[in-house]
Image 1 (cartoon, rainbow, N blue to C red):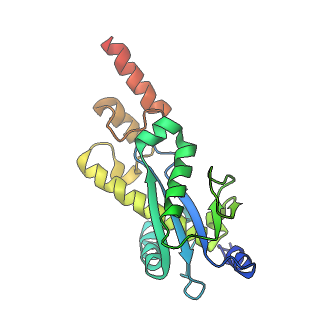
Image 2 (cartoon, rainbow, N blue to C red; image 1 turned 120 degrees about the vertical axis):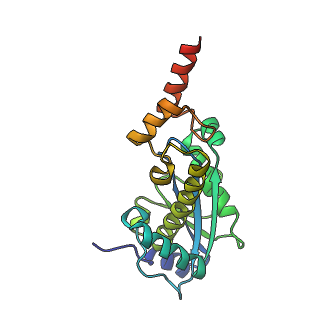
Length: 210
């Protein structure tokens, strides 16, 4: 199966848009933790080999590629918090994280390649959506790898402070063990209260206490 390529970036560069950032987010589905986005501007003369959709790569390979990307590209990572997810919903929070990562780039991007089918609200930079972009576009693939590594590390760190939920392995997703821990240990400050499994447990707890 053919992996991602640099054709979209080259097309933008040929039209005079030379600072092209790939943008992707991870962490929409978990019950706990922030949503994380990365913006990556690759150097056409130093393209890392082996880039692909982060979900298709082994953990060790992701770690290796993340180091390479950070060494040879311009990378910025940003988050939207659990509180923001609960307040504005996960879609808007993921777009907020993307916008923060884009705005953090040291030189303003001239063109954005954004994974998915929606451009974040308020984006003033020339942009293109790429559905399944992490498997098609090298810059988006690089962003997906960096974002996943960063968020995974954050969840591993949180797991040390909130043991029992399995965040070191499930990184906040609603696995059977995580759901069981929610029922037995309760809801932490890092759980997304607007997500149904967490909301239901909180509602049951309130119902019982009432």
